[in-house]
Image 1 (cartoon, rainbow, N blue to C red):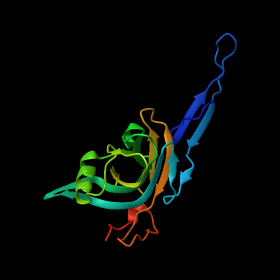
Image 2 (tube, helix red, strand yellow):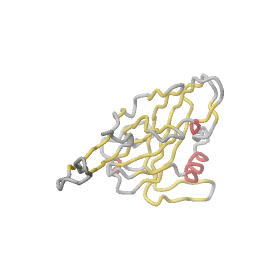
Image 3 (cartoon, rainbow, N blue to C red):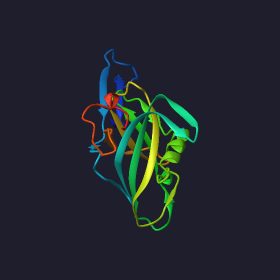
Length: 195
């Protein structure tokens, strides 16, 4: 038996057969919960020539670009990263990695490109996952935006290999509550918007 490499809860049934192919009446049941070792939000994740660290997480109902406002279907999780690249040529993160978040109910949300574009317009020093990061760059600011269910209690950022889709790391996300980098002590669902 081999466990899946993607986090989640899995169930399976197995029924034995005799040498003639006749099935035994009883079945075996297996339940598997796959969890990655969870990285602390402040810990750097080293993946080959890359070091990725979450530096800030905000809970936002909307994003803006000029006079255009965009509301989340649920709520936006705005994740700011510090990315270091020690390769030999400029390369984008998305050539190696895919990003998603999952919540306490194992619901998965992918990147929201439109909301991310709008949010980065407001914080122009941040790049997206497609930006070619130069070799020997340390702590380059990257912003990712996810539209997550409004009732998500807790969130984890999953870093997957691209294009294989194998989960390489999972980082527990804890929102900030002020521009003074105060970490919120409760769950993601109760975090107030960044002041």
